Amino acid sequence: MEAEKLDWKNLPFGYLKTDYNIRTYYKNGAWGEIEASTSEFIDIHMAATALHYGQQAFEGMKAYRGKDNKTRLFRWEENAKRLNRSAQVLLMPEVPAGHFKEAINLAIKKNARFLPPYESGAALYIRPLLVGTGPEVGVKPAAEYLFIVFVTPVGPLLSAGFIPVDFSITHEFDRAAPLGTGHVKAGGNYAAGLRAMKKAQKEGYASVIFLDAKEKSYIDECGPANFFGIKDNTYITPKSHSILPSITNRSLQDLARQMGMKVEVRPVPVEELETFEEVGACGTAAVISPIGKVEDVDKGKSYNFGDGITPGPVSTRLYESLIGIQNGDLEDSFGWTKILD
Ligand SMILES: *Cc1c(COP(=O)(O)O)cnc(C)c1O
Image (cartoon, rainbow, N blue to C red; front, side, top):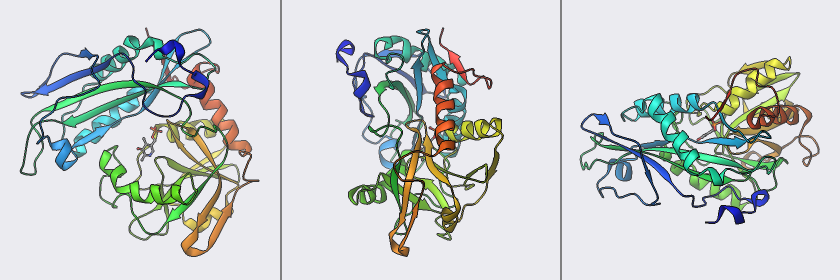
């Protein structure tokens, strides 16, 4: 791939080959050296626990090039902590923060020519992945693991950018059980949610809203992102054990407070959709996807927000504030960004 020929302003949110990925292996109870590889392939045992029993977890974050040409990483320590929470839940070894940092820094540096230019709307997406590679046939955690970090330049998750999209509510599928693994970034949650997402997309929606699996009456995860609603100067987001704790969501809560809004993290009944002034989905990929309409086909209900084509004023302010901090245009009073040395 010739980085020089990339159309930065029209990059998809997808995989593009870069020059290097970074690998480190866990064997005999210890992590080995950090290595750079030019291969896009990994050679793992066919009986690896990741392949059979889903013993794996991943992360996702972005690096941005600022006006000053410096590279900024957004809250990487939070991703390191979250990966280790996933590791604890899935009985994998934790990746020490120093090891994590070294791997992502090296991944960015070795692929510096793929870091999109300032103001292109694109960023360098960083994907750390922890997989059980040791062979097992009986169900138990592997003895060996691989931690790999690859990067890929990405455009916005939705090519149209920051404009409202429509979501549907599924009553037919659950993504995660109340006491399952919905709160960790495990690939298995995505596999469980694929049918619902595919069905919604086939019906013309951007993605699907999952309800809580037990009572089916509260909003849970919002496609591959968290849900938030705005009303009465309040930022409201669901509290649930089966939702992945989004770093974007937590950052938006802090920004909302800084703007003088109230923040509520509590169960959000589906019917409350009727009362929100604005709703959206949030996560690293899109930061905020404003939602213009939520359709509950089974219940014959449709919830509309604004004119359906213009993002709401609060979502817009939150979005611009967060993006501004991430790319270094706005003052980072929270100390969220780290400049790569
Ligand atoms: C990664 C992810 C999010 C977003 O988390 P961020 O830290 O904001 O990127 C939300 N929901 C699910 C299911 C996720 O996997």
